[in-house]
Length: 142
Image 1 (spheres, one colour):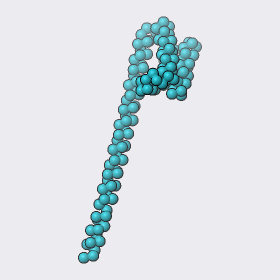
Image 2: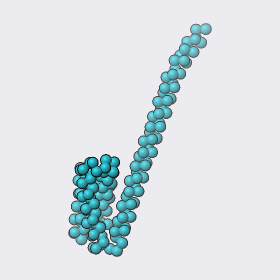
Image 3: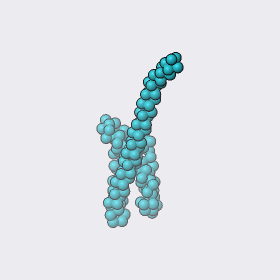
Image 4: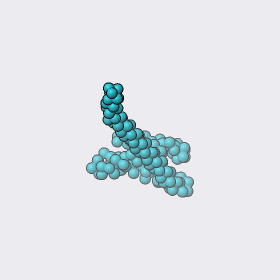
């Protein structure tokens, strides 16, 4: 979790520095993607453990504070509708992350299915092999 917070803070600093140097927010879209991916990871941890994980909760609060700064920048210094576009960008990133997670879960299920089939086939073969050996011995002794 500390790694995610450090990555989110680093990405935020890249965004803030780029903006203060006169660049536009879209010039640092890679940093924005990293920022929100790490925010999502921290938010999931807080949601799974609740507020009992104080470190994760405080990290999420810090990220919310940084988002307020970004919102203020977009509303007052950015172009019209920039904040709405930003929210749409976040939603798109979330959809991509969820799709990636669904694909990974489907791949794990498929792998488990293949392993189960392999074990079933090998078990059946091992169960049938002694019977075949017995039949072969019986038929050759006649």
